[in-house]
Amino acid sequence: MSAAIHPALRRAIIASKSIPKPTAPVVVQPMAVVIAPVITTLPPSYEPGPTPASAVRVKWYGPPEPYPHVSMEKIKVAVSAATKISIFDMVSERKSDPIALARQIAMYLARMMTSRSLPSIGRAFGDRDHTTARHSVLKIERLVAADPAFAARVKAIQESIHA
Image (cartoon, rainbow, N blue to C red; front, top):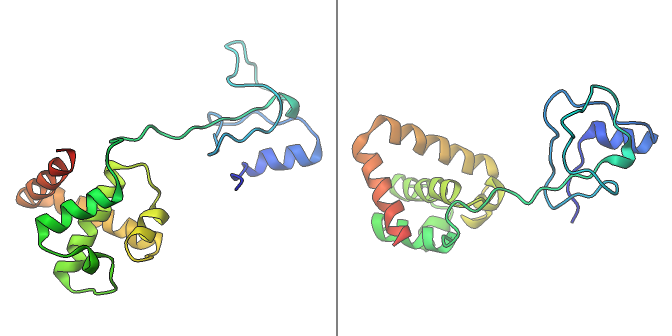
């Protein structure tokens, strides 16, 4: 499995030309992409201008896991216990309000407490699309901001996962 390379970098490598200076900090790619032999950071004396393609090496190990001991299964069990909705129902195709809300809370907590991507969170909850996971996260964020009682409920579930 290979990671994506920034399009400008790809064009420069293919054309064997020098790489133009990025307008923002270097965009790092997942899975320790090695493009050429050396370069980890730009020296402080870096001047605007092209960087040779042979001097580029980009590494990224991803963000640290926010809560290393938290797994998707732990989140599902905690949300299931707090909402009285079975894990089977949470990952099923059922869309009734209590089941959907429990699933959305679990997806929100998965996003906040793990470094898993939206597609992998969606797959963990019944092979749902990443846009469904994104909608769940945004919806729960809105509910937490608008309703202190709901925010306390979500916080209690989150704390039960830590225990």
